[in-house]
Length: 357
Ligand SMILES: [Zn+2]
Image (cartoon, rainbow, N blue to C red; front, side, top):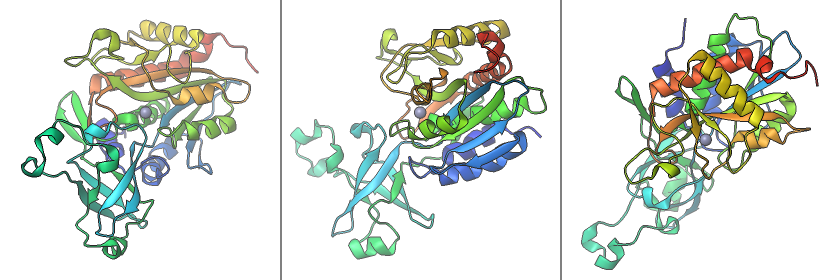
C-alpha cells in the first residue's frame, strides 16, 4: 500500500534528531525503505544507505540529510538553569520565549522554556536590543544542578524547539524539521515510485547524518557508495515574503522543485543542470532555478569524493527554515518527487555517460 504523504512528513518532521543524534529518525526510516530496496545498512557514522540495483554499470546516489538544527546543553548553572550552544545555523534573535525539549540518554523528553525577563523589569534601553545567544538559558524548573542530573540532563544533552507537525490547509504544512525531513520523504516516495520497475541505474538512497555541521555524513557515505552521479535533495529557503527583494529570494512557493546552479559548497555541474531541466520540461514538471544564496549542501561533499562525482541539487521550497517552524506546499513536494523519480529513470541516458568508469 502506498505510504500516505502527510503521515510520512508528520512522522519524520516530529522525530528528534539534531546533528549527531539521528537515531530516532533512522529508526523511523529503516522499516519504510527496507521493503522498497534490495539492501539496507547503517554505517559507522549512522548514515542509512539503501540500494536498488539496476541492470547497468552506473550508480546514482540520491541524498537527503536526517539531522535538523538544534542545541546542546553546554553548562549547568548551580541554580538549575541550562546554558546551551547552537548546533547548526541559528539566528539568536528568534530563540527566546520558545519551548525547548531536552532529550535524556534514555530517550526521555524533558520540557523547558527559553525564558526572558518580562518588560516590567527590563530597562527601556535594553528592550531595543536583541537577546544574544550567550545570555539565553533553558528553564526546566530544576532548583539546582543535582535536580538537573536527577532529571537525566547533563552537559552534552541534545535539545530542539519542538512544535508538532500540522496541516494548515489542503496544500500547506508546517513542521519543525522540514529541512531536511522533506528531502528524506522525497527519497522514500521516490523509492516507492520506482518499486517493481526495471532500472538502468543502480539507485542508492543515502539518508545522511550531520549535514548541518559541515556535510560530514555525506562525505563518508559517498566514499562507500562510489557513485557516478549524485543528487542532493534539500528543503531550501523560500523567501517570497514581504520585505525581501526578488533578487534575494532563493526560491518561491508554488514554482516547483528548485535546481541549483551555485551554492557555497559547489558549482552545479552544467551537464547536471541541463539534464535536470530537460527532464523536468519533458515531463511537464513545473521547476525553478534557485537564486544562489549562502549555504552549502551535501552535493558539495559528494562532488569531491574520490575521483569526483557529477553532482546536482534539487530542493523543495520551504519558508522559514532554521527556525522553530517552517512551511511547505504539498504541490511543490509532489513535483520534487516527480522530478527525482524521472531523473532516476532517465538521468543516465540524458547525461549520455560512458557505460562504465
Ligand atoms: Zn538542509
